[in-house]
Image 1 (cartoon, helix red, strand yellow):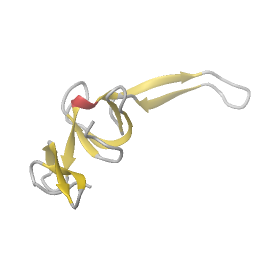
Image 2 (cartoon, rainbow, N blue to C red; image 1 turned 135 degrees about the vertical axis):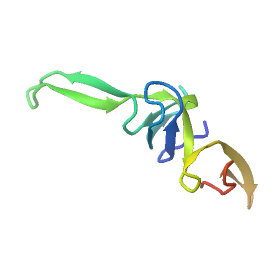
Image 3 (cartoon, rainbow, N blue to C red; image 1 turned 180 degrees about the vertical axis):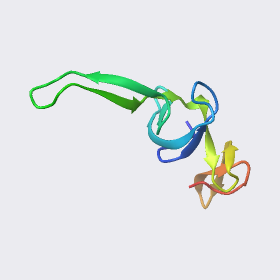
Image 4 (cartoon, helix red, strand yellow; image 1 turned 30 degrees about the vertical axis):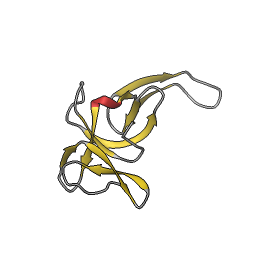
Length: 101
């Protein structure tokens, strides 16, 4: 999986197509990511002794193949390549050619 936590991504498929957001969590075993403000789901929480019942709106996971890295310099979605610099493997933006991290 080429997407990491805290990356800005654009949704390229599904009901939230076109939305951008920050990756809150990655789930590599299932190849899924949780993006801020995307795939909002409603969860009903039962009442307990300390808190009342409530309806929570939270982000659900979406497949990593449905998101693309958002390059802030190019202001567009871009693919990610890899390059070795100083003996370390780094991610590179295909549009601008600059290193991501």
